[in-house]
Image (cartoon, rainbow, N blue to C red; front, side):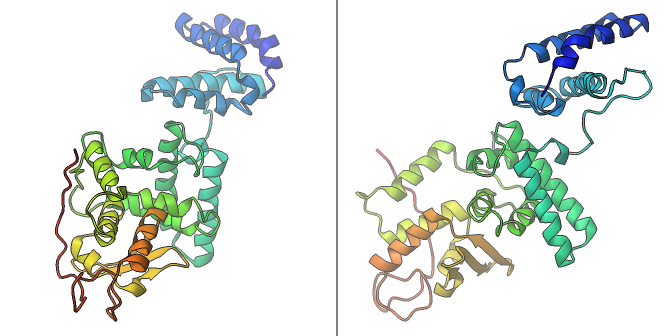
Amino acid sequence: MNLQNLRHNYPILISYMERNDYSKSYINSFKYEIKNILAAVNSDEWSCYTDVYLEYTRKSHSPGYLRHKRTIIGAIEQFDVYDRYPNRIRRHELFERGAYHLLSSEFKSVIELYCEVEKKRGKKHTTIYTESNNASTFFLSLQQKGINSLEKTTEEEVLSIFMSPDGTQIRSCSYKKNVAAVLKACISYYPETCPKILAFLPALRETRKNIQYLTSEEIQKIKDALTDGKNMLTLRDKSIGTLALYTGLRGFDISGLRLDDINWDKDLIYIRQQKTKIPLELPLTAVVGNSIYAYLTSERPCTESKYVFVSQHKPFGRLKKIALVTWQSG
């Protein structure tokens, strides 16, 4: 971003504001911001004044503070780029309203691709608007946490958007479904990253909040037990535990999982939940797929049963019950 015009001419802006009786504190806000912009070591990385503002969003600031920054930076942009002066009539907008206009180029591309794909499929305009708007705020939340691409998105940051540190659900199930709809529509364009982020989305219930019963330390202990090659857990038990941990499936849905419910080519799991009768499509992540594959190829008995998980003793039938097992670590 070329700052030469601002560097040479900003005194004219300050003189104009002084002559027109702007308050001293308001003028000082302009002086302070201009000084910061001209002294910034990373100014070469900025392409526009929106990038200047986004530097503030990456830190923890109140909505009022950020709104004030948008006003000041927007007015500086109007002077520097368009030779327009403050007029007390209209507040200068740094960018259009809505989360989309604040997104990185990659996140914007995802939203644009989704809209293009779903318009061609004939989805309602109102549905496209709602889903794209929710996905935009989802991506903006990631961006405010320092993540500006799909590749950099982590499970921890995704979960923090839906759950507070104390385990309280802060986003609705419909919000999660709208985000998922956008990601699913873009899988063919981002085959490595969209399925990964879909797997990070938590299992939320429609009518009541999903409470995080396990602490992060407890979850880590379970993960350690599932990957420990020296404990007494069988490959079947580890595979069942991995499915429960990473997909949130109920025990009777896991016991009812059939061999043909798994699409290895597309890395997907298709099931109809026994409690709700609702069909469900889940991404078959590497950690889950590898665990199931290890059980099927190395431990599962030779049987004609159509179910993935069978008993360890003849006649090797479907598991009738999956109990919750806890592991005690030393």
